[in-house]
Amino acid sequence: MKKTLLIILALIGLTACTEKMRIEPQDGEQLVGVSASITDEYKKQEVILSRTETFYGGAPEMISNAIVYVVDNTDTIWYEETEDPGYYLSTNEFAGHIGHSYRLSIDFYDENGNHHYFAESTMNKNIECIDSIKVKPWVYNALEVKSYLGVYPYFQTTDDPKTYYMARIRINNELVGGDTLTKCELFETMGYAGIYYNGPLMVAIAGEMPIYGLNQKDSLEVVHHGDTVTLDIWSIPRDYAHYIYEIATSTGTNPMMGTPSNVRTNIYPQGEAVGCFHASSLRQCSVIY
Image (cartoon, rainbow, N blue to C red; front, side, top):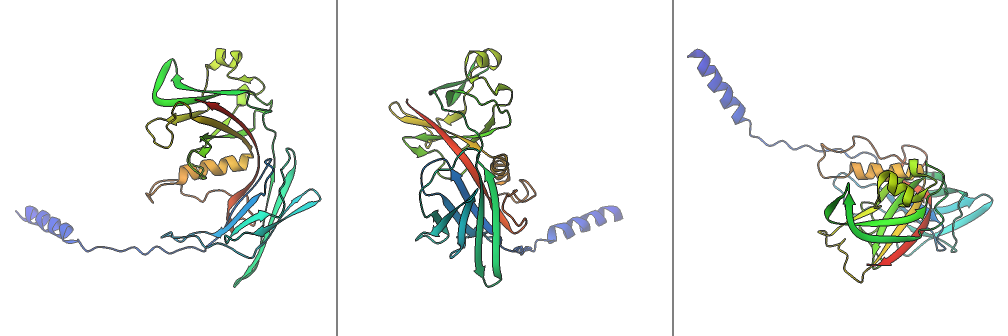
């Protein structure tokens, strides 16, 4: 009887603890966020500067009045801020070149003094061109993947198995997923380097392979007859590929899930900034579905 009474009292004690606890997370120091690229497209190249958000989010604080420039060997390319705070464009249009290294420099002053950030990236070799693409049902191991259309490219691969590529899709010139990186596919040719992608040899070894899958149950990815589908293949630096991958595996709303570390960055000084600067080249091909 005494033992039973003790158990009842213990249960009452546990169920009585119903007072709500409020945890007040402490924000860490805000860092500088950098989103910058050099491409081989002839245009005004872009740099975006902001500060990281607080725990509760909200609109990012943009960084204005910075001195931004890129050095390409001996040439200096200057940037100027647009009407949108924190958005900087090169003063002249230009296209990056494969094999060239670019060094980004950012300087600005605030209530904490002078700040200097820098990063470097080299534009790697890309494929010469995408000869053609086909948009057709995605078949895997002789079975059709229902509700998905595969985008099958045909091109001569480079002989470098360590090259990283990023594939993105446009439907009627609208980028699937918008400007975010959530709808891109990363891939390497690895053992297929130097052979024709989806050519007879590759098909004999591994079968025909799509490079992107369009989910026909997703309204933003549905393709209708007459639509123009464009495949973008970017040759990207290894650190940018790792950056994209870590962003993809670190997102979510559950604070108990995801990668328990900061996404890596190539912005220096280390620990004072986040983001990435990359030099990347683009190849495109379109087809009417």
